[in-house]
Image (cartoon, rainbow, N blue to C red):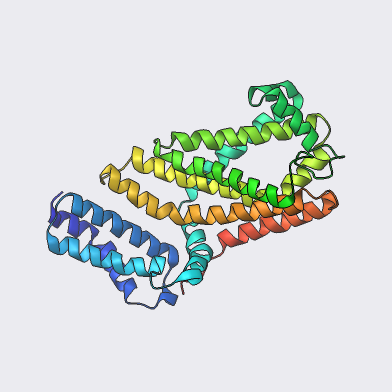
Length: 316
């Protein structure tokens, strides 16, 4: 493709983005604007890689730089910029990648349900995913007589467990995301494995009669934890696609574009995991809270998460 052909075929997108840049931010369609911005970034990378004329590259550089100011609010400082990224850019970026989110969710849920059902009927199957000592610990953790449900009796204070949960949850999410650079295979593996492992624990605890403590324990914080892991895995799958199928872009440029697209998803997922850790440490493990209260709180949390991602945030 010549530079002229390239310009003619993509002119409608550039003109639409330039027109949007002259309008007030309140009138913008966030998802359409984000699409046009990402497309222009891709075209800029292609133009630079193919050595197209300087005026064309300069035009695309100008367009993307101005759009970048709106998308990421470079003029904002401190908490204001972070808050906007979390409350506006995060849900917009998630909705811009629906198929990756769907695939990631299925990779977690299908193994969880299948393995959970199998282990509930044949408890010994859990030994294919965990050793016997770990399996025995599961039984003690969810024993109704345990004063702190979901943890061992000598596990430490709530604050110590809060720190442990943060490190553990973010570690899992990090694996699901970064391993996507292995052509997406790493993300596929970690999503499926964590789904299968969680299902195995649920199946085993059910088989020994501790379901009445296990499910109230996981119900509330799972709204944030499971969602964050799925979103981190979805971002990892997007990274994997950029490496496996870079399209017309050089592989490095394709990876850089995918990293820019998904960085806010990773940031938002990390915040969700901190929230999940706080709930798990101070609420889910509390034996004095009734199962009914935990399920009611869980319903509220799942509804809150759904509203957060399905709503259409304003562009201002």
